[in-house]
Amino acid sequence: MGSGGRALAAVLLAATAVLGAVGAPAAVAVEERGGGQQARAWLPEPTGPYPIGTTALHLTDLAREDPWQPGQRRELMISLWYPTSRPAGPADRAPYMEPAAGAHFDSAEGLARVNYGTESGRTDWSGIRTHARRDAPALPGRRPVVLYSPGLGDPRTWGTALVEDLASRGYVVVTVDHTWEASEVAFPDGKLAASVFPGMLGQPDLDIGAVLRKSLAARVDDTRFVLDQLAGLGTRKGLPGGLAGALDLDRIGMVGHSAGGFTALQTMHDDPRIAAGINLDGQLHFPGPDGHTGVFLPSVAEEGLDRPFLLMGSGSDDSGSYRQQPGWNALWQHSTGWHADVTLTGSRHGSYTDAQTLLPQLARQGALTADRLRDDVGDIRPGRAEFATRSYVASFFDRWLRGHDDQLLDGPSPRFPEMAYER
Picture 1 (cartoon, rainbow, N blue to C red):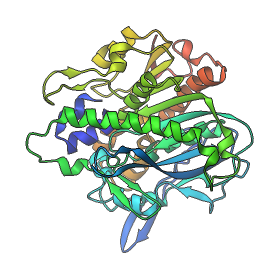
Picture 2: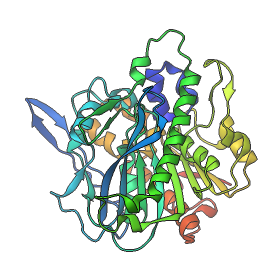
Picture 3: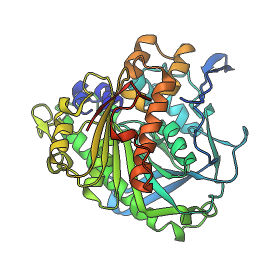
């Protein structure tokens, strides 16, 4: 599952490997804190015409037991990103991570080190600022909704650059943390739910296939529950003004990275409310029932999809064309809906996440090695990777949720020679 899969590869014994910026400021800064240097970084500017608002919501599924914490109800944190008329000034920008979450993500127990090789204690993740004003009123008008699911072990913030860009183009984007799987989830009452995956390391006879199937099932259930909750936002108190009315739930898409890419397409298969989906380098095959041999294909791969989807592969050894992956190939052969496959030449799995923008900045400050940076994001220029990802994702959702076709997805484009295209 890519860097999400490689995150787990380090945590759940390498067998998980079978799963699979335009306008960005180049400046970085170093800040002294407590006698040590803290690496800092910036997100690229959104390219759409709208300022952005964001708000976080705590959800509890009273009908479902948490799969990782028996006896507890399933709790989630989500964030909504949306157009507003009130731009965020430098002092008003929401933090990239809440302080407690950022501190844990950067610690020896967090998954920044495992997933991306950053040196523990070196990066001020909560010091990074988004471009969104927290709890700003929503701009009037009904807008398509796009859900975002992160990679295995990654927090919901790890796709913020893409999410902000979609919101600036007029979408309402909903990001989902998959609790006890994500590196950490910070709740409003101060509770921090850290990932259970590191604690699984060293367990005798660990059935990796079973763990992954459990995780993916939980993710689909999480997403369908979030869809249910979005339908009832009009009765929820304390929302930013106009936000509930801004969601057009007759036009829903979903995008996800790595395990989130699986989540997007499997949820689309299971739930007709999702009209179109994008899989950012998330494989659709993983270890068989005994956790060590055979290949398990989920129902979305075995039965296909009858609605539009886009596969976006990377230059990682276990990615690339749909023809090279049993899960993607099965999905391709069994699907009747519109579909295409693009591969970002020179990229790696992390190129479809904030790793592409943030890690080069952090590497220049010594927070990770050049070799690890290359493993995470390849050798493509960060601005080009960010631009290509944003352009293809926006083109897809504009076409299938708005009926605006810029024809980028009709075939190979001279604007993006680094994108190999298959249809």
